[in-house]
Amino acid sequence: MNPLLYGLYLLIWVILAAFRKDYKVGRTTDYFFTLQKLFGTILWFFSIVSVLWITFQAYHLSRLFLLMDAASMTVLLSLYRVGTHIALKQYRSHGGNYRNAVIIGKGGTSYKLAKVFQTRRDFGINFLGYYDEMSSCVETRGNLNDFFDEVKNMELDLIYINERLDLPTIKKIVHYADEHYIKVKVIPGGSLQLEKKLSFSKYGDFFVINVNAIPLDNAFNRVCKRAFDILFSLVVTVFILSWMIPLVGFLIRLESQGPIFFIQLRNGENNRVFRCLKFRSMTPNDYADTHQATKNDPRVTRIGRFLRSSSLDEMPQFLNVLIGDMSIVGPRPHTVPMNETFKTQIEKYNARHKIKPGITGLAQVKGYRGEIIKPYQIRSRVRLDYFYIQNWTLWMDLKIVFRTIHEMGMNRDNVY
Image (cartoon, rainbow, N blue to C red; front, side, top):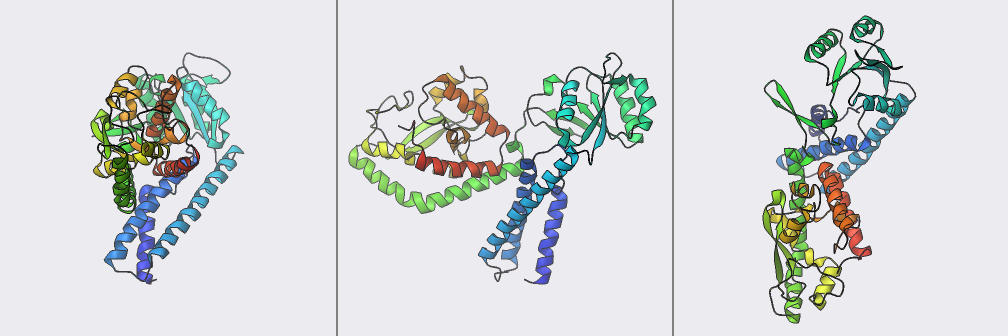
């Protein structure tokens, strides 16, 4: 490799890593978050390298070399990052690399945070106790005046403030912490402890908490997911649908008169109605939108039974992905009448429409697919869809795709 080009690639990696700060192993973060940041940096790196590869016509570096380089970097750096993460957590759980912390203000959710410090020793936070004006117990070291008297001798690193404290008290604590290089964190009250990953928005010098933000609100995440959708669906369209549509269309028309495609109105992102494509697997009937297919359903044709059992009837939905109505992975779209029924019966049902629906999804690979017979089935679907939306990563999409391929070959239950 040209030394100058190699030096440029190395500089790009250093700049990306420094900008994204993915070299930092968070004290309270888990392995998956560390790997997610790493994969994002690697994706950015090889996107830039690919552009330079074409720009400088560095064709002496083969595509295979670049792919092998990407694979080896991903594996080796993943092992290094996870190994570092594990080593640090073990070191902290045995008393090393700790931070001294106090909580000012009891009540509310303060006790939950204290319990976390006591049970998660791997966080490396040494909880010294509370300071509170009103409460008294074994863990309460004294009131606010006692705090200012004792803090000078405590080698304190972190102060956690209960949000119920009055503003003058909070300002006094923050001012002292600024003067003595102590980090201050505010404990959100019960109304904000929603089992969500909260984020913040800045309006000039004013901050607000984004209570129901999701990963796909991030522009970079949306671009990554859309790029994956386009690339995957293009490959399927060019290499599979190009010959499958004429062949399957011929077999459908050979058995029964009617259109090749079954076009059904379904609810998509933000409940927007779109035209969902499928290969027609039934004889034309007036109940397709309101009556789910059941076992031995007389409406299903012979070729339709094969298409449904193999999930090949869903293949035209890759065209829906290409035009932007759907995604490869996401909550499965239901018909408009079914949505109207479910949203009155299931709590948070409409939350599954925050993102584009998918050809496959987390609920489907967990076994909740096909006909909905019992209420727990739709509740489980919604719960898994909600989890997917709140915790989306590109890595999760890839795992679901691979699981779907496995399920198509191994598990055909509840598919009629």
